Length: 305
Ligand code: PDD
Image 1: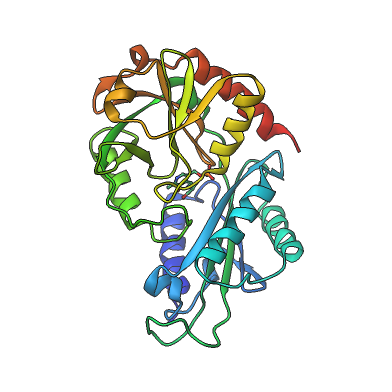
Image 2 (image 1 turned 60 degrees about the horizontal axis):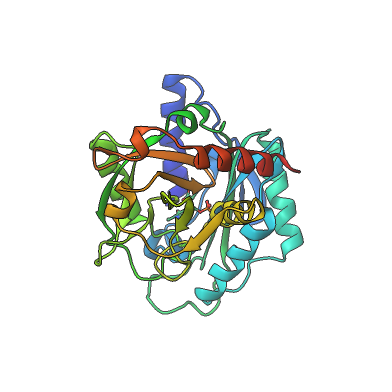
């Protein structure tokens, strides 16, 4: 039996009942073929499905172009290397496939999702000898959440129970999924994941930042404890170019609550203000001027072809 078939069918039934789901991917790339999304399939013995033995990237599409495509593909290569997986294809055909999925789904503003797993093989922990990697690409329309960027979000803090190599963008997001749902259930938008020493690592799908009262921008050192976000790097570079003070170091929840401003960065969140942590206001409970300035800089950056 094929996993994608079942998931696709359920999705289609849901979509038919509610009318067409806005922004859904219509065409997916699966191992060299462009197929209708509802019929897109991977095998039940795909190692991504059985072991989370795979990696992924999410790249923003803005006015039809890929935002920071090269850094995203560089990080993909890094993830592949850390997983001891060979690149499934050369970069030029990969870039072509990404563009083709965007084009076939008519995405002007949205995201493209790329996943590479170690492939299909009878279940066994050891690397399979001859499996070819599975490559899946989907794209969907998704407008930037301007209302949320304007207003800001509330986060809760939760213990970071993930594995110790969060620098690798693996599809094992179990802990992220649980934390995100716990945040939503608590009436917040996201969770900031905190290490055993009480330091904030990152959000469930974003990097965490504060601006101190001395106007210093602070975000976690890009070590094994966090994913080195491509948006994080872009914002860091933009901030430094503008002459803002920037420092990479861990910060605690107490420091964040006492900070002038807080925000998150990510491919799907851009620069989004954080206005409350665990029910307590940050920066007077409203987005601050540095966050606003970085939002403008990042939007201009994303607009560039
Ligand atoms: N997540 N930290 C984590 C744990 C993430 O999953 C992400 C991105 C980020 C931000 O990275 P970037 O700026 O490169 O998007 C940080 C993607 C968007 C996702 O899982 O959907």
